Image: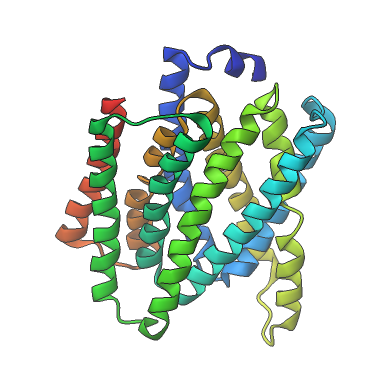
Length: 300
């Protein structure tokens, strides 16, 4: 599989597969975000998810994929640090703000800075039409956040810090997207990067979550948490793995923009499972998000 991925890099087939993978990542990332914002504290959910995908990745990292080249170890260390801070800011935003407010801000901040980062690191450039698409997508994302912010009635006293953490999360999204794209391109086999990334990345937050769980006066049962972790681990593999492969196959900026259509799917999840309403205005704003992604892809 790794050899086939490498063989189609920079080809029309690779670009088509990157498009499919980025859209798949968008759907699954919306599910992943909702799993962290569900009935359990976000830190507990994050801990069991990381533990699950770390354990699932271990046998592949140790016994299946080719061993990482020596130069990959500093890259893995950098990814570990970046993702640790990204998770912390994400959890801080989820704890303080409504999902339909903080999620669009997180995802709206990310693609703009990712496009800039891809230009600085990889020399990628966007055409004028593609920048128009980015502007349309950002208008939909931030418009959705503002509309939701005006209508929420809960957690308003913590809304301002939630938004600051959401913006900071978006910056880390841009940083890890660009950095991970560099990492997956730095090794001969992309699945070596994926297996070792998930294995290493799953080592910290399970211990933080366990310490938090032990301090709770009323501890949630571990069974439902473990089930959420297994499901979330599988979703994380498919979501993050898809977008990482997309950034190896095609432009990093395009993959980042397409992934941010996850906000459209997140709104549907918020409506179905978190009892958060949509309405005609949100539908129009979500249409802008989708239209922006289409313009970016067509302009490329």
